[in-house]
Image 1: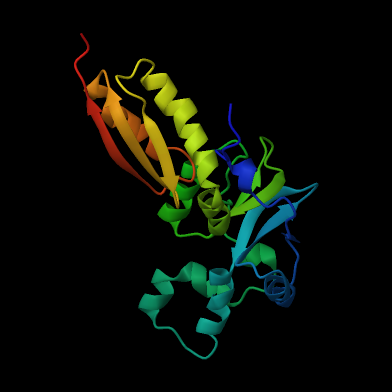
Image 2 (image 1 turned 120 degrees about the vertical axis):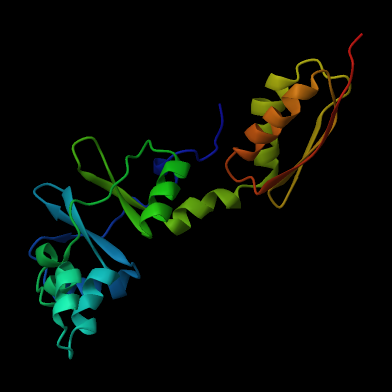
Length: 217
């Protein structure tokens, strides 16, 4: 088929730093600084993900360091106030962890991150065991695909399938991830389909369509 990185396991980071439930606050901060990450999976047993500690979880301690919150704040932010006094990963972590499977599509992972406003997702198998981590930066790797790879995939998986007998050759050109389609095709109704499928190819930034229909005698 194709070398296109369609799934999380194509782009995820396999070597992951994680902590156990009992990891102290300062150790968590040191690991985040050392590895330049914004969140750490929390593991138990042989590597099952039970939660995630993020920078936001840690910042509660600083936010409430020298304040005496009023009763309204106490009611509205019970969780944050509890984390302000937390000393270990188990007390700090958000649980259950939001995770993704290795076979999930990049679009699925991106939607989860966007909806929840998170930067990194632990990647787990069917038993909840940690296999890697996927970040926003990992998802953007698809846009580093060479233009000729993208063009080959569009020709093979879009043009050759939809337009098997074009009135004139359908040309595919890709420049900086932008796909340009030109030519005449027998069924103009398929042109929007071609645009949609080409746009769905990993690494495509946009589609500039100059296809036109022609009556077949």
